Length: 143
Image 1 (cartoon, one colour):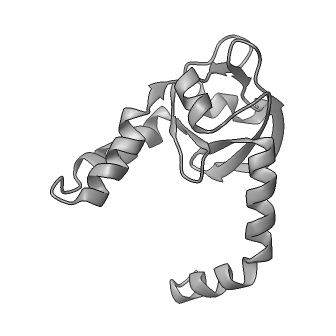
Image 2: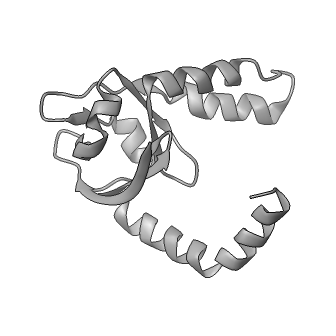
């Protein structure tokens, strides 16, 4: 399970050191792809396979499902960790998420999200400000 918020940096070669506490979970392979809200998603290989299987079963006749599948699947790349626990984030994904040197890695149960630090701070502030409305909407879903 991934939880928490961690400050990290991306080096000049586009490598990100995965937080040490998450390395064992990703040791058997991982996949990085475009996320939502201008971040990247990093999934353990097993969880990625489960998501990909669901995506390929969506009806291709619906434009929203095609668009979402394209966003997630066409942007995906294997993310193998090196001996220092780093993964390479491809240039096109760093550009998509406007990642600079300073990033925030957030744990969201079955995936990690990788955010540009400034983008994350802005997103987090807006979400915290609207937390009452968000909680109310989730209450209607049984959460």
